[in-house]
Length: 195
Image (cartoon, rainbow, N blue to C red; front, side, top):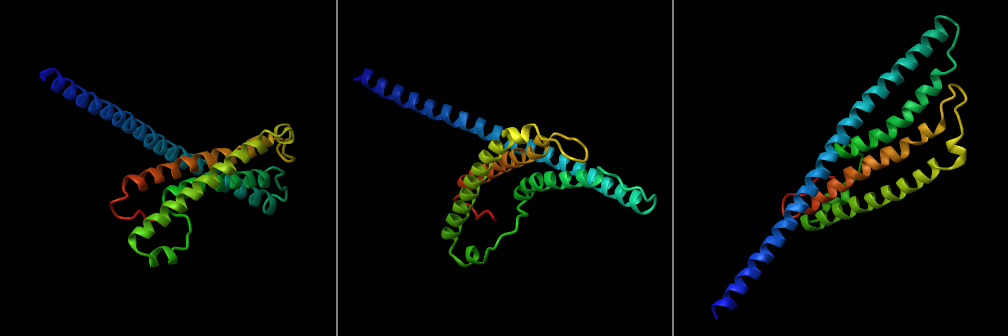
C-alpha cells in the first residue's frame, strides 16, 4: 500500500517538474523574443536616424548645387529616393511597434469588451499573416536575376541593396506583430491592448 502511494506521489512530482520545465522553456523563449524585439527596435531607430540625415543632406546639397552653383548633382535625387524607400519600410516597423499606425477604430470601440479583444486579436493575426506573405514574395523579388545584377543609373549602386529594404522591414515588422500577438494572448483577462 505504501509503495502505491509513493508511486502516485512520484508521478505527481514528475508531472509537476515536466510542467515547470515546459514553463521555464516557454519563459526563456518569451524573454528571447521580447529581447529580439527590443534590439530590432533600437537598431531600426538608429537606421532611421541615419537615413533621415542622409536624405536631408543629399536634398540640401542638391538645392545648394543647383540654385547657388548652377551645377546640379547627378546622384543626390537617387540617394534621396532610395533613402525614402528604406525609411518607409523600416519606419513601418517602428510605427507599428509604437502603435502609431493609422487605423479606423469606430467599429472596435462600438462593441463589448470581449468582442473588442477578439477583433483586435483577429486584426493582428491577419496583419501578421499578410506580412509573412509579403515577406516571402519580397525575398523572391530580391533573388530574381534581374534584381541581383541590376545597378542604379545615377550612382551605380547594386539594386539588390534597394530591394533588400522589403525583407528587412517586413521581417522586423513580423517580429513586432508576433510579440504583440503574444502580449494579447498573455493579457487576455486584463484590459484590452489598444490597436
